Each structure stands twice: as C-alpha cells, then as structure tokens.
Amino acid sequence: PDVEFCIEAEKIINSRPAA
Image 1 (cartoon, rainbow, N blue to C red):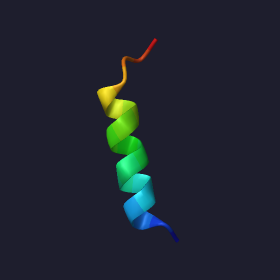
Image 2 (tube, rainbow, N blue to C red):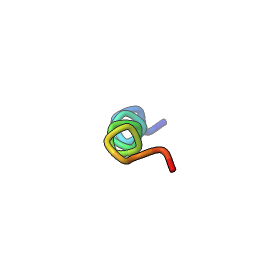
Image 3 (cartoon, one colour):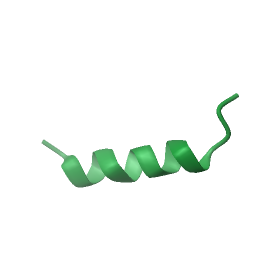
C-alpha cells in the first residue's frame, strides 16, 4: 500500500482548511 502517499495526503488535508 502507499503508506508514504497516505501520510502526504493526510498532511495536505490537514494543511488545508476543513470547510
């Protein structure tokens, strides 16, 4: 599985405002 990609995606989502 793409663990690194998952972490990166989560980081981006966290960086973005939860509208």
